[in-house]
Amino acid sequence: MSNNIAHSERAHALLSASGATSWLTCTPSARVEEKFEDETSSFAEEGTLAH
Image (tube, rainbow, N blue to C red; front, side):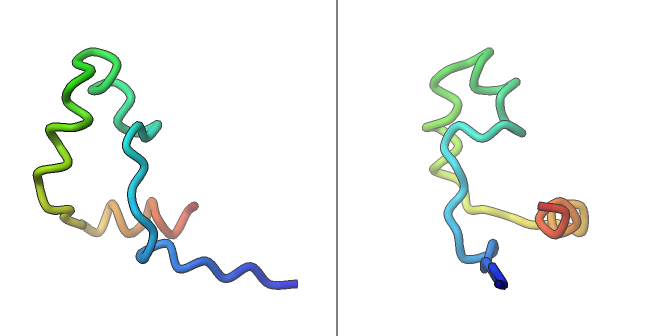
């Protein structure tokens, strides 16, 4: 059985584990960041591939 998931097509979690430092320190930051367009980098692509 193969589970091919198109991670690039999934929405980001509002309270992601990788952003926990920000949203635990400044709770409103999670909603404020929604106003900015998502960007990627080679590091982000590597992390996505690892998941």
